[in-house]
Length: 88
Image (tube, rainbow, N blue to C red):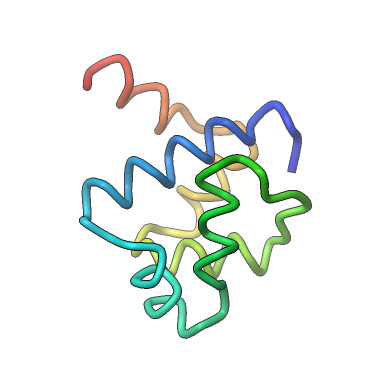
C-alpha cells in the first residue's frame, strides 16, 4: 500500500469504528479472527506497515464495509474519507 494513503486509511477505519461503536476486539471477532486487535490498533494509529490484500479484506469484514470501499480508500482511489471530512 502506498505510504501517502496510510493516513486516509487510518482516519477512515477510526471513523467507521466510532460510527458503529466498534472496539478493536469487535473488529477482530467480526473478521473471524483473521485480523488481530493489535493489528487493527496499528492501522488506526498509522503504524501498521505492508498491509496485504488478505488483511485488508479481513479488516473490511470486521468493519462490515465492502472490500471494494476499503481497498479504494487504502489505495487512494476513493474520496470516501475526504467527502466525510468536508461534510462532517
